Image (cartoon, rainbow, N blue to C red; front, side, top):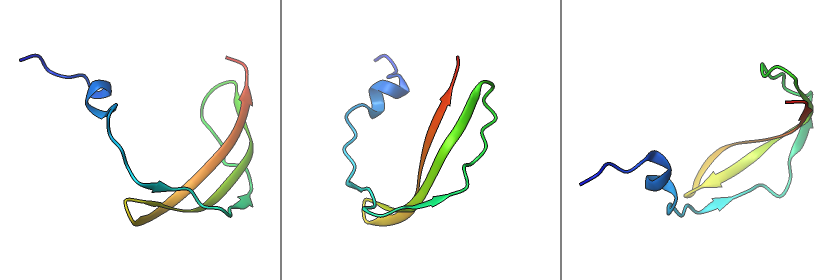
Length: 64
């Protein structure tokens, strides 16, 4: 039997994820990716399978 790639193994995963309705804007987080700049960063609390976890949304721009 052949080994599955990681992408094949996780493509059918179905998690119960609740994205927060409200987030707070914070100072943009820095990135170490050359040519990419963060314009906006928002944080909140999401739920994954009933467990609370940090939610970070970043708007980025740049030239690749």
